Every structure is written in structure tokens, then in C-alpha cells.
Amino acid sequence: MVLKTFGWSFAVTALGLVAAFLFGGWTAFGIVAILSILEISLSFDNAVVNAGILKKMNAFWQKIFLTIGILIAVFGMRLVFPVVIVAISAQLGPIEAVDLALSDKDRYQELVTDAHPAIAAFGGMFLLMIFLDFIFEDREIKWLAWLERPLAKLGKVDMLSVCIALIVLLISAMTFATHAHQHGGTHVDKAETVLLAGIAGLITYMIVGGLSGYFEDKLEEEEEHEHEEEEKAAREGKPKSAIALAGKAAFFMFLYLEVLDASFSFDGVIGAFAITNDIVLMALGLGIGAMYVRSLTVYLVRQGTLDDYVYLEHGAHYAIGALAMILLVTIQYEINEIITGLIGVVLIGASFWSSVRRNKRIAEAEAQAGEKTEVSSGV
Image (cartoon, rainbow, N blue to C red; front, top):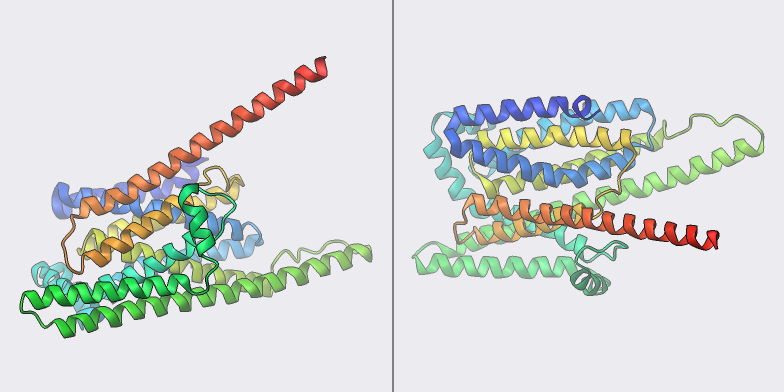
């Protein structure tokens, strides 16, 4: 079952790592491995969300999502998008950007470094909003309860995450301007760049969030309508038709999934810039990660078990929060790529371990309850 579902992902992983080693030796191998682990970690909650929605759809729409949808996610967002970011920020044509990345790596690195404040501000703000919206939401399951309970109460204040994000952006821009001024740089231009790029990141997040919310509402309306139709059919003694989300509801669900997928892959792409500026290594790492989204989604839908490791989503979001802050710090200071990658891996690992311990506790409690029941019934 595992080999059947993950076979292609394993094959792509092996090919990707070999290609990385041939391209840049052990350093490149290490960067792609860390990038893949981070992307797979971030993709886990993506796969969970996808699977939760996908299992409601009929076989035809499931197939559409797992073929056309994944093609859009893999090639559109994870492979083409990094090129577009570099092309826009360095004011190059996409073909020129790819050509430069492959033929003149020093010049490409220079262009990316010049564009880095804009990329870091844009990406940092987008990721920060994902993290803030997650921690300010009141959830039934809490991983770090001592921290998440008070934050959930604070989250009742309207637009709090936007206010905090803007304050962080303002501090980043002012810090960067001071730093540039000390070195005799054109601090006004750079501060403006950071502010504009950060606000663009915030707007992008709000548009994606707005679209997702719109599709979700549409979806709920359609589901209510379908439920009424089913009840009506049952009352009239007609057979239940396979209304199971084959019409407009399935179409809206597909659109909603694509928006969600884009936003998830976007954080992976932006996160990749915190690990490396090398477009080849980025494409390899993100490509491997994207394959695992598909495999994990299929696996979760087939297994029907989405709630086994309940804290993984928390771990992934804390990793996103850490990446956001790291990106904003890199506007001024250089941070080692390995440290960046390992922070995410450690957070994901900790959340996985906590989930395993929680499952053990629940299993032990259930076993004890079962023993007590047996004893009392024996008496």
C-alpha cells in the first residue's frame, strides 16, 4: 500500500538528490534534502486539508484534482513561480532569468541579493499572516496550551493579525533604513521597497484568504442544498442519486482546493528563498515536496485516517511563523541556510512526537477504562 502510493515520490526523491549532488556536490545535496524535508513537512497539513475535502467528491472530480490540479500545483506554483519572482524582482524576462540562473550563477546571485529585501518583505508578510491567523483562532485541540489559550482570547479582537503584521513590517523597514544609512546606503529607497513589498504580500494573502472564504461559503450553500434534495428524495421514496457533489458543488470545491493549494505552495516557495537563492536547487527541493503532497493526499483519502497526528498542523504553522521572522531578519542580517531549515524540521519533529505521546495516553486511558468496566461487570 505504502509503496504503491508513494512509489513515484520515492523515485523522484532519489532522482532529485542524485541530480543535486551532480549539480553542486554534498552542499547542494544537503540543501535539497533540507528543502525537501521542510516542503514535505509544510505539505502535510496541505495534504490533510486536501484529503478532508477530496473525500466528499465523486471519483471523477477526485481524478481531476489529482491530475490537472496537481500539475497546476507542481509545475505552475512550485517550479514556474520561483522563476517569476526572480524575473519580476530583478526586472528580467522569465527565459533570461532561467538562462542567467544556469549560465552565470554569480550575476544571478548578485541580482537576487539586490532583490532580496523585496522578496524577504513580501514573503515574510505573507507567511506571518498565515501564522498569525492560525494562532489567533480558538481551536479545540491545542498543542502548547499555555501559549495558545491566551492567544485565542486575544484573537477575538478584530483585525489583530493585520495590525501586528503591519507593526512588524514598519519595524523591519525602519531597522533596515537605519542599517543602510549607517553604511551610507540609499536608505529611503530600500525602506520604501521593504514597505511596498510587505504591503503587497499582505494584500496577496488577503485576496487568497478572501477567495478561499468565498468558495468555502459557496460550498456550504451547495452542500445544504444537496442535503435537502437527498431528504426530499428519501421522503418521496426515490432512490438516492449520486448527487454526491458532482455538479456545481464539486466545481466550487475544485476551485477552492486550487486556491488553497496555491496558498500552501506559495508558503513553500517563499520559504525556499530563506533556504537558498539557487533556482536549480529550489526547483529540485520543491518538486520533491510537491510529489509528496499528491501521495499524502491519496494515502489519507484511501486510509480514511486524518486525525492520527493532531499536532502536526500546529508544528507546520509554527515552522511557517519561524520562517516569516527569519525572512524579515535576513533583510538586514545573513542567517545560515542550514539553521533556517533545521528550525522547521525540529518544530515538525516535536509536534509529531507530541502527537505520538498523546495517542499513547489516549490508548492507555481507554485500556484502563475497559479493564474497569470488565471488573465492575464481573462483580
